[in-house]
Structure formats: structure tokens, C-alpha cells
Image (cartoon, rainbow, N blue to C red; front, side, top):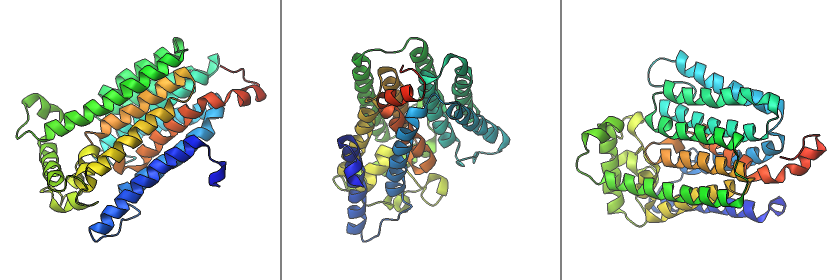
Length: 338
């Protein structure tokens, strides 16, 4: 089976396997077994499945069924959040995760929009705009801040698409910078004894406590971390399921798997951007931007704890990366290559 995979697929799979392997080793060193339900296992598995699904969907991105599925998924998200009272909104049970999922749907709608024939574009525009509405309905500041520019980029790529390899290079470079800056900013902010009032408007006091706990644990176990699950046990807020994680992927990984885990996390982020950049120029720009939005948002929230969100991110990567391979099928199905 592995013989059917190309070099790119094997490399991406290897990065994920090393990630899970390190988490397993660190758990064993802490005298524990790594649970299959742990985000250290569930997230990479969801990502790999998503990439495979996205690659399968890419050649059929112009089909009516894909358009209707994206529109239906977006409208379902919007209705679900409006119909659910309280913070535990459907379908994920967490408003920010719903909003992060909606941001990925903006990107997926954009990828389909790039391939859609003229008469089938408006439902995808509606889906993309409605997805931004989902972020507003969930009152997710991070998702709104990321989803708005992504929607603008999607519409720009549809009507004035990138045509050259330069667009891919620029998008990948900006993606790398955004990941590095966001991670650095979060780590710096987490070390501050108090936060300015403006920051507390965006990030509540509970996050300040959780981030501070994560930084202290990371400092005590800098290189290798304290082991998966350690944050929940030592955090002053760990007894509450809503605050049992650090609400920051870089701080959680650093506290539990050390700098080794953070390096592997960065490798996954960069590999994802590189993977998305392998498609056609316009699709690559949209795919890289959408994936980057998920990674950056995850720096300030526990989004990787939700397999559905990571699955959607994987579909974006697989679809974008495979978009350059679908011209032959386009012609065979009667659709001119774009």
C-alpha cells in the first residue's frame, strides 16, 4: 500500500508518524500509555484522513454535488449555532471551534469557486459569505479577524487569480512568517505577570492563568516536556473540562512535549503550507492562507482538540495540493482545464 504513495505523501506521513511517536515515547517516559483519543493521536489521524479526502475531491471540484455539499454544510453550521443556546453550541460544542470550522469552509468554498463554471458560482459565494456569518454568530474574535481577510482573498482569487509561481512563493513565505510571529507573540505574552486592558478584552483572565501555568510547566521540563496530559493535572484550572487544556497549541505542546514537540509542531505547520502550495497558483494561495488561518488561530485556542476542525484543515490541504493534478480528468469529463 505504501508503494502507491509518492514522495510527497510519504514525507507528510513521516512527519505525522514522528509526531505521534514522540508523544508516545514521552508518555512512556512519564510512566503512562498514550491514549488513542488523545489530541496527539486524534489530530494527526484526522489531518491525514482530511488530506486524503481533499485529494480525492479536487478533480471533482467543479461538480454540482460539491457545490451543494459546501453550501449545505455552511447553512447547517449557521442554523446550528443560531438554534443552540449557551456557549456549548452545535456541532462541536465549542463556539470558537465552530467558528474555526467555518473559516475552513470559507477556504473550501474558495477552492470550489476557482473551478466552478459561470452559472454555478453564486452558491459558493453565498457559502463563503455565510461561513463568515457563522464566525460572527459564534462571536469568535479570532475567527472573524482571520475569516474576513480570507474571504476577501477568496473573492480576489476568483476574479483576479494568481497566475504565476511567484504567488505560491509569496503565500508560503507569508504563511511561515505568520506562524512564527503568532507563536512568538503568544509565548512572550504568556510570560507577562499581567496583561494590558486591551489584551484582556480579547483574551480573558482565564487564558492568562492557563498560559502562565503552561509556561511554568514548560520551563521545568524545557527540552522534553512533562508528558501528554500533564498540563491538566498541574493547572490551577485543570479541574474544569472547559479549561483543562492550555488553549494554545504551542504552549500545550511545549509544556507536555518540550522543545522537541514544538519543533515537530512547526514541521507539521510548514509541511502543511508546502503541501497546499503544490497546486495551481490561485488554489495554492487560497489553500496556504486557509491552513495558515487555522494554525494561527490554534496558537490562542485549543482547536486541535476537535477532530472535525482538523479534518477540515486536512481537506483544504489535500484539495489545494492536488488541484494541479486534475486537468486531465477535467478534459475527460468534458470540463476544460482552467
